[in-house]
Image (cartoon, rainbow, N blue to C red; front, side):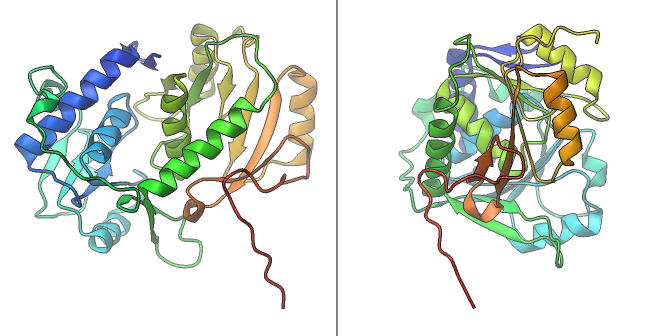
Length: 307
């Protein structure tokens, strides 16, 4: 498996494992991050973010990523809510953080990149006793009724979500190529991107991470489809998009007429609408039929409340 960003950075699965193992050791040895520590991540998307996620989870730390479009007051509220021990950010985002006494570490710094090197071996790590019931992540809700809220998910929740996503994806119609590639154009601070990222790693698929300074634009996305022979995308000429097989959209509804026009233009592409909640770990309903939210997915129970 390769983790590929649009700047040309490639990692094999072996290198990916080596990097996150080295980073795990370095984070504990040099930054004293241990089991139960809450880590706030406020950073632009990059290929190093997934490695940081895995490294923190492996030592039992609690990962809490945030959206970089939040205002300083909203970020201050989130920091006060979760009370992290350290903040990870990038040079392009650090000025957007509120004033804080918390230690702040740059993900795009030379020091962070040195932590990915093999001198920080996993033998330096103590045997962390991470259990399924331990807290794994704190994600923030959309805050439609008030300020953003922290949603806690355990390692058990993540395992169930990955299991459900894996079963759903493998039950889809057989694809022509075994090299299944997933493009993450939405930020992976969100439960949708976060859960699909973990699922991609679990299934051994290529994860193409869109890394842009300003925004994810259409030309960059379709260029990624062409050069990486994308088979799946969670977003929607002059590019060869013949490899595209599945598009999953979630978080906001799309007008029926748009999906119908898309189906005409790209008749070989399956379009799925997904409904889920952060509280459910990203597991939810998904259907190919227009106007239908689908059935209850695997590994979930549904309860009807009437009256």
